Image (cartoon, rainbow, N blue to C red):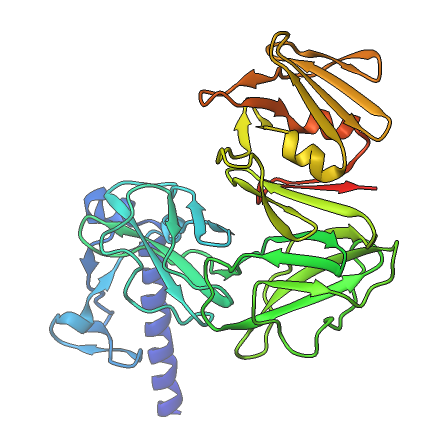
Length: 397
């Protein structure tokens, strides 16, 4: 019976102590004053001894003196997570952009530490920057494609202590491939550039389908393509094919899918390919000068592409006549006739006036520069304008 009574007394003592703790944590200002909030205090029990949190988390009430383990920090419950930020991330093919909100209380905050790890909950203690980030955004460029990174954020106070960890954000940085296409006598030729982060890439898988977004899950080659171009010859004439590309990593995982390109196989059609800034064009795969002997390149002006058109039209099987007295260019192809005048937006197409949004002009080197889009569209040509590579493909029936 004495043992039972003793246990009841001990239990009652602990109940009183924890009731006091709850009261202190809930109303620290009322008991100790606002200056004592977040300061160290000690708890004396009914028997005159102090509460102690021993190593390992065991709590006892048997200490006669106050030491490090006999002190406790008062934290107001309503403000325990007041410095927790909400972290968001947006990845591109080269970096990861982060934004976060300021905590409800920014007093004594000097910045933020961002932590990056390669496993969930396993961020190292060293932040990604040498000094706290002062704003509420950051761009992390020290990352590689094909790896999932896990980030958390903590506020940094002027006494170098840290706040609560934010939500964890997983981010996969994958380099998006840019795919372009053209058709020729031998098949459909596809081109792409190496991604900005090419570490561990062993090649590329090319996928083909006959409907948009419905490519086969099996690539068109048995092994990854090692180069950055490929000509698909296993096609049927006069059919439309849709292609996408994926990088293949050394662990056999695949990268993010590229843009989709389409091509109609018409192996008897003539294809002319031109690029802004290039003095050469490809005519059915053969390299020719745009302005033979002059070195003139296809140029962008006011958002439109200009070039000396004579060699292009002749490669189509047409003819260009220049009248220097009237500053007039006459273009003939099949049954089409187009007349353009320098400095005039009004052209004559097959006898009817048509207005272009740009006017032909004479370059500083004295070359006649004509708007390519207006001409080829009014000649009835099929064109493909690739804005990523600034490449124009013209198909002539």
